[in-house]
Image 1 (cartoon, helix red, strand yellow):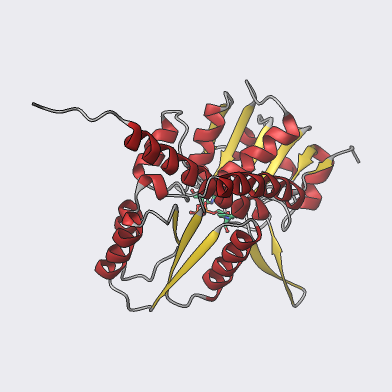
Image 2 (image 1 turned 90 degrees about the vertical axis):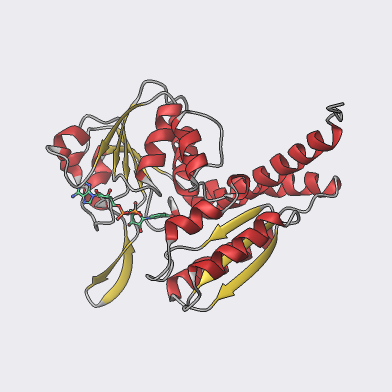
Length: 301
Ligand code: NAD
């Protein structure tokens, strides 16, 4: 078997969070307390766990968190009212709307209602558009975490051929935009792609964000590829429930230079980048307020 690197997402996330903690401390010294509002509509058990983990992590790094739990029969109008209140609240820097929303709600409208400078998930069209233009914006947390792992593993990404498998708005598309910004040559594969395996075999870097357990095996990989497995799939393994990625880890190992495990790879990075985005948003809002208050008053007379 070739020597390979196991990319440790837990350790990488811990490093990101140490820096976030330092940034929070330095903001607090300037009397700025970063704060994140988390909105959870309904009682989906998985969403409840995600929200609890986000709030715990925020507390650990000194970010104030405010939780808004809404009943499953909340109307879109009621949710929009809450978002408008949070947008106007200067003590709140980031707004996270936990997805998915109940089926009767207008998810896109709710995401679009979040002020772009408080959109710590990076899903507002203004941030999506800015990212696709290569601007520095609040970018989605999971692909930002993947990019961090790649930069730590590969160093300079310029000119590398990256294949992103999956084209969702949450992972695949923003991942492709971030890799383009990092000067990779990017191919995006999806459920309608022809010859997906052959295209993937040309990649120096593979990011799998499909949601199909162990779809990507050795036959998809060029020897020496670096593989980031975003997939989180719960399977029944001889009567025991466990999590596996989109990559068949055991089959891939002999072929790769580096790979993320599932769990313990990309997962921890998502929350770490949510915290990072909250601090970035707090700093940007403070700077914008300061430059507004320092701007000279122009009289029209
Ligand atoms: P999605 O269902 O929205 O998108 C899946 C994509 O895979 C689609 O674009 C589809 O075209 C593509 N696809 C489906 N079958 C394919 C095939 N045979 N070949 C090539 N492409 C195919 O999923 P998503 O929200 O992007 O999530 C993908 C996976 O990542 C899921 O397992 C999800 O749980 C996981 N995820 C993990 C994190 C994390 O923090 N680690 C965050 C978000 C999503």
